[in-house]
Length: 278
Ligand code: 76R
Image (cartoon, rainbow, N blue to C red; front, side):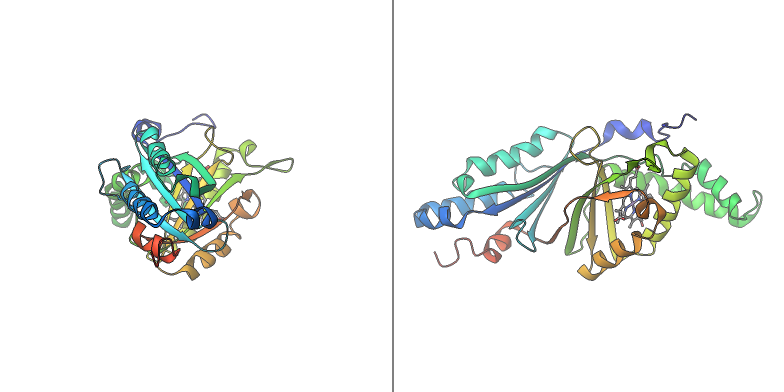
């Protein structure tokens, strides 16, 4: 297999586009708006961000951002990138448009990473870890993996969002420095490091769910990391834990972190006190 081969390449045609978008309200502008126009603006924003609305992208998540990087964030996914962008444009075209400052965005796509083992590679790994090819446990493990792989790959390409309240997004790169160049390391070594990485991630099963989307060729960073957690402390715990994986400790570089809490658009407006008291 060539070093850059993608064993899951066949699945890539069903990948979705993904945008993480962050906005801040311009309160000075909002305060100058007539009360009735503000009410129309609220209504239009709620409609534009209604995941069941006719123009909604196939996945749509609104969240309240902690800290002053933004007031709220959107995570939008769809097979059609312009359907995603149209949500953004509808927000800007509405009465609240001039009062919305876009503070950050990241454009990416889903993929099945080349480090997700095929059934065959998984079998080889089991043997490396001490299993024998004709043992019942080997066969049972391989069968279980073959059984869950299609659903796992479907979740990577066309994800459902988990029902967790806290989320964190950050972009990242793999380093290309003399002495620490991820992209000149042999595939076998990268595979080994990513297997270590996946193992430490799996320790958080049931507490953290992750989605890696690719920004290579699309935006300023190579990957977008979206984490969801049942409690924000697990966001801190998992990122700290992963700092010690060689794939992160030696090769990872990170962009800004956005921590946020998932709500619907009316609750977000209420939390941000937009139109409260009108
Ligand atoms: O998709 C999978 O679950 C298979 C195994 C896996 C891959 C291929 C995996 C598992 N990751 C993969 C790829 Mn990951 N991941 C990150 C970060 O903060 C840091 O140090 C790094 C940011 C976190 C927190 C995280 C979590 N992962 C990747 C890639 C793409 C590399 C490429 O293709 O070249 C990046 C950039 C990346 C970064 N990862 C997991 C997790 C968790 C929690 C898991 C376990 C998933 C599970 O239990 O299903």
